Image 1 (cartoon, helix red, strand yellow):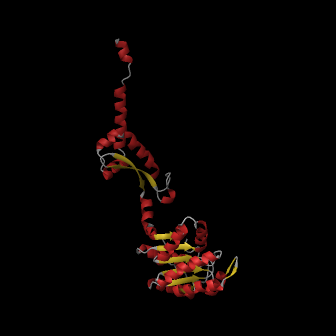
Image 2 (cartoon, rainbow, N blue to C red):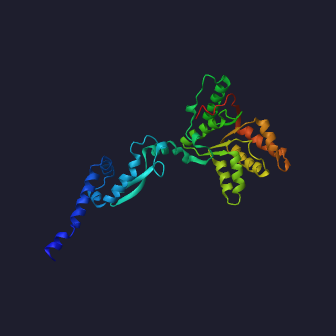
Length: 304
């Protein structure tokens, strides 16, 4: 090979080494990379040998810089970003951010829900969150105090009144407190529960849900009286309530009507009238739960 040919050959190895060195220095000067290496106890040679992985990690966590809340998350999977771990080998992981970890901590009691037919806004409320405002009348104050006392004494409650007065919210407080204390909870939106029973009858899931309702430490039957009455629904409800009555399990209900209105509602289905079935259900609800009227103004904006 001539001297001229030697001069025109690119010094590939030298160029690659220089590029790798610059990439390595860039990563080593990055505060977030330094913090990662220290926290995860990653040997420095892993950085040298896996520059691409660390560069990708830095790019993946870039949207997290300056993030102020979970609602402003810019990651593909909300609350999660790429992570790295070292256990003899370098491994890519998926990690929850501090905001997501805090959210998961607040919702850890949800693991004690056997059935959870309640929206996200209800999943963390507790009785300590009750806010009595100047325009709340004395009757509402007395009702809230009675409800808290029933809960403390492990007694059932039938919360009834107009829409928007806070019945479901108060029942959710009891459910969450029970779950936070380690008890098992079934919170069913009764119309939705009835629909599921019809849809899943042949899969066995309907019977599994019935069992959860029977054995939960607290069962909340939300919005009873709003369902479409069928002979099957009455039979299932009667079976659940009878078991809970016999075993003294705390049971709460919410509905718009009082016992008389609920009894009239339960009497009729598409095939006609069954007064005896309605009477048996109401008899058990009376044993299980004390009626408490939640009346007054619309409080749906109070607990947003």
